[in-house]
Amino acid sequence: MARTKDKPSAPREPGRMKQMWQVFQMTRRYDKGSQWLMLLGFLAPVLVGLALALWFGDGNGLTIALWIVAGVLAGILLALVILGRRAERAAYSQIEGQPGAVGAVLRSGLRGGWTGNEMPVAVNGKTQDAVYRAVGRGGVALISEGPVSRTQRMLDDEKRKVARVLPNVPIMLISVGHDEGSIELHRLPATLRKTKRTLTKPEALAVANRLNSLQTQLPIPKGIDPMKVRPQRGKMR
Image 1 (tube, rainbow, N blue to C red):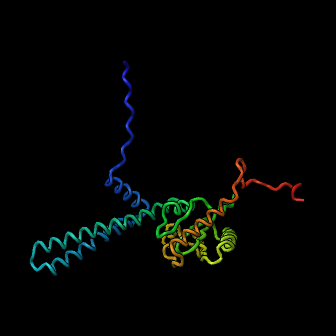
Image 2: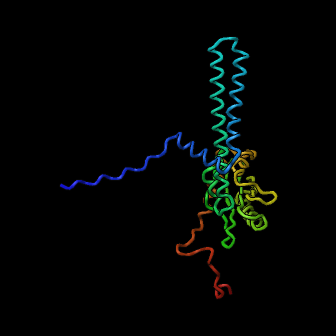
Image 3: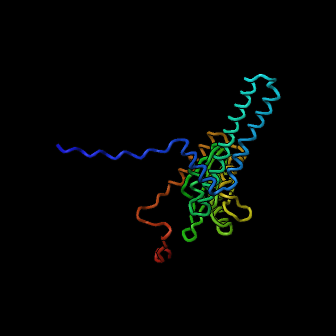
């Protein structure tokens, strides 16, 4: 009998330490100051722990060691927190300005009870400008992607649509970009988290379900590109 060929084994995922090292290398490549912030974040708790050990240790070796270990652990934790924040910012900087960048953030970068969809609710087929929507306890956020001069009208149109359906729900308009009054892409999650909470969790869920149901009421026929549809003159008469 012929031997059956061994199936190639799936490539092993890198270990946790290797992943962290890769994240650190990527972050350092796009953010030169991240390594110094991490070093400062590590040394500050260590120095504080050392000072507290000398102050409260009173010559007791065990007490001094415990304070120093606590400072080292706190330093490692703070350095990892800084790495996570700077790595997220570095990752966003690589996609900033590209179509769909806001959708990528809404898909994976939201916290604090906010939910969003990577698919926009309005798109300009010529310029690729888009408007996205997120829902949370702060209400409804409409987020534009593109220059303010081109997207402001799109934001206003979407705001009128939402206000017509949900007149008592707060609606805020956010522009992502580098224009005056806009915010950078990496600040979008923090901007949403800082929004004043006016809805309960059940209310926010009901708002999201209401908007999603309205969005799917009018399905697009298969085989038709909505960006290329033109009304026929004969039917306009």
